Length: 499
Image (cartoon, rainbow, N blue to C red; front, side, top):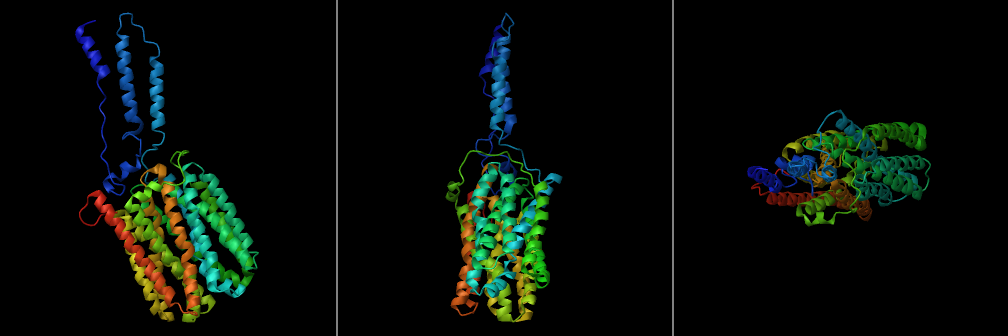
């Protein structure tokens, strides 16, 4: 063999393959968003292709060198080494499903299915105000006692999210979905048979809350994996169903309750929920391969100041925002002087205003930043909550309800989109979203009962509850501002970051 051939072969076997290094980026840096969504810890910048080219280069060089031997025989085991290299490459890239499609029929069908999940979960939860005065009159219990039914329901939706989010990452979305449907339908049909306080607490509060907890967080987590640049818009389309559900269910109660009674009103609502969730069962599909290993918590997330401030800001925001949904009907009847039937119109106004309130801010969030929009909507809602003290007439209560409903709807839709933006690693997205939900669940559980206790302590006056609502939302907005400031410093941005 010639000397120059031997030198060429030696060079090919020892030279390290060229490897591109990927710059470190912040999760909310727009220029790096798609890179982050397509990568994670231990994932090479080019997924399978980078590893495959390296492995083929090394294997091919060794094989070429050996094949130039005078006897011309292929060395034993060369093909097996190549197979092992391909196997290792495939296993390393199995967690890289590629960039989100950001559209297409399949992705938008997932949005449709999640829309109906949210329609039944938050649409019904935000309609609890129509049941609050009915249960007070039926059971003869104080408002704070009845408020626990709606608060427990809301608490379970968020609290169970920490577990259902991780189980979704593990590949159990279908199991969670059908479990949630069973609990939800069992709860609503048994509520129709209730006659005592503990009946409604168990069926309307706990059973339906467990069902909604198994449905909501997994649907949000799965939907977020289908979108990157349009994620906030997609989340807004899912969230706006809270408003449509909040319109449909109060209308059904208003029309059916005087004619067919409470039991058949609840059963009819149950049939509507059953039909719409059937659509969700056929349209929601998972895209990311399951991650079997890992814990149900990622406590390292709280070492990130931006994440921690965001959780605290969301906590205080939700401590106050649900109080209005629980007490607006009671307030309009007790203070403004509307009849129960006319007071139900306010619930429809409140939820109806939430439809554009969930679409508009999420559309803008894709352009100016999710947390930026969350700050604005939480701050304006806080000011609106304090202005509630001046609302004492029919001419004032309708525009005030419309205004608050718009901005409160934005809070509820921006919240999961912001939590998703703070979880760039697809493998941990369900866990991180679920952790935020669980922290917020404490606020959702205690906010309305605290307001109810303040109303009872003030002998029917809503003044202390109104200050509580406005103050909580303004504090939440302050912590969200802190979260954004931290994001700007981490990204090295001078001025206000687009976070």
